Length: 205
Image (tube, rainbow, N blue to C red; front, side, top):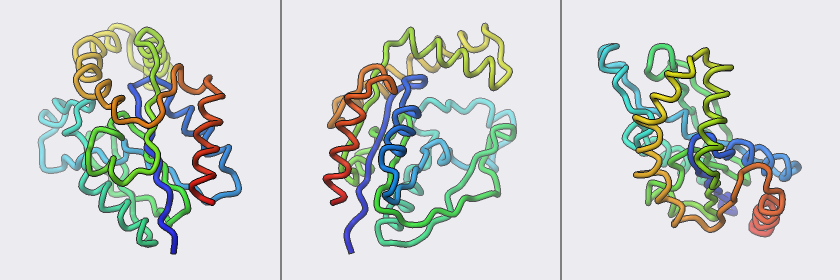
């Protein structure tokens, strides 16, 4: 039985990696594809007090349970179904709800640190980094957090300057060097997206 093709898609917050991922999945319609979002794998914090949970830096690699993510990908490679965790952002810990994911021909792993973990990278057949200018990323993040999450402009800016930007420069940006393909300007780069999907189809076939 053929090993599934594993694609990693990384990039900073607001880079457009979700848009790229969506377009890749649409272009692969007709093939069996599953998306694994790294955000589902924030560590369980039920053993911490709420005050301790509120101090979590979600823009640091340590916030993610990569061991569980790698275990689940190995199970999918072995054609086993997995129960993916979900996260309760209101309680700042893992939810009791899980999502059943069945094995597919293509597994897409998407997240800001999708290329940060070496063991995870070694499992990937294609590694993609979505590279977008910082001013575009902060504007996108601001629009999302204000419109969708009810946050104030000042709180978004403060978080960006104090946490998001330094973590991006220290941990996210350096993962670019591990990528096979760099996509400037995210989901609007249709030529690059076409190249990726063409490569994936070649691997599948």
